[in-house]
Length: 122
Length: 496
Image (tube, rainbow over all chains, first blue to last red):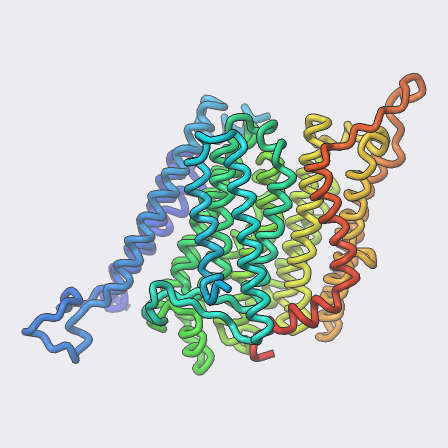
């Protein structure tokens, strides 16, 4: 059990981040805090991909004369990292749209606290 | 004529148009509108050609982006299922844009350019979701269409940004859960290409990681589809968005998510395992059935026409989910046929909401009475036809998808679903006849003194798309045997 936790400590940390992000998005009353939760949530998934693709002792996928190309443990699979570059771009775009929407909410109702917002929307 | 390129042309047309629309604002004020409309017509032509070719050859069209062969490169696939959905969303868009020509300017003045740009972005994203054969690419297209969707919802009344923010939070949770599921699949199978993954998954038993991947994908897409307990974003978003935005997002947005669900459950994972090993299909059917009743009950309680239709959308997504959940050929046919019918019905109803809003100023049910019948006879006739189809009376289209759903339930001896279908149809009788009773029977307050209201029909450019779409409900109903045999049966996955 201890070994299981120790060997997968990165995944435990990611799971914690995931839960913190979800908590922030769903439970926090302030809209900016919700967005912060969203960023944490998205980034935990990005870290998951990067962590899962990492191998100890492996190098970047450029042929190295000192290393055999027959042994897959010598080289990293670059695909998850490239995918996550795209995912980061997507995440940034969503946060941008989120802030734009928050600004227009503030212009319409002069508050970003959800209870007050619901009060003023009536 | 275009060779295999018609497949890639569909998203490319829309993304190019999304860029062209802001550029051509310097020309005439009307240019953004025409660019959007012409691109949608081109999209209809390209998807129609793709559908015709894949049906006539009986094979899917594969397009390898930049010439990289899968599984290394990304491929676009037009098989009967995806080409059919592409044609559906582009056709609905043409009608919505046709109807929205003056409405967009009058409801959201000065925002026409970003509006049409977002519409094109939405269409590009949705057609990308339908055509792609790569799971991660699907995620990217999903987010493109979602971002455009958030923006479209936010261009609405004063409360629209709040609805849009809620949609953004829940939509991002959904898309991220989907990405998590894709990550799990990639870690165990080592590929992102759907055909590749399917060939691996269908030959061996699924590991726990793959089962959690399946659950995460279903959950994530369930949020986008507004499946019953995950539908929280839908109602406010539909109510507060502008009329044209709602009539665009409501018919096609949730349907494309339903397509992803069909694609994942019937083509990607081993169908036998999904059906019997883990109760995903049963869970979907139960969620769909509860959604049908829940949407119906809440629709009856609404005092705003648009909000009522939004709740009825929750119910009708339930029909599609129930069809998928039956996991039989008849259930599959019912799900796809209902997607088609519901898209057309909801488009008609929300377009009429837009016409009414232009004439009356709002969609409150209280302000409706029999003067509407005299003022807008044709619009109200179209409304009645669409309402009858939503209730599911023959020979309108809505009856036949419910009929296949009932047949599919009976085939498996699941009588309880039949009861749910009948009950939810009764609910829709109640909430639509509340409206029809007002429009046709309730006299105007103090009508004796005032002269009968003059004919005040909405302008031809708004009336024509409504009438054509509602007439097509009859055609879809009468021609349903042909549609099922020639269009939907070729879509059935190989195992059926």
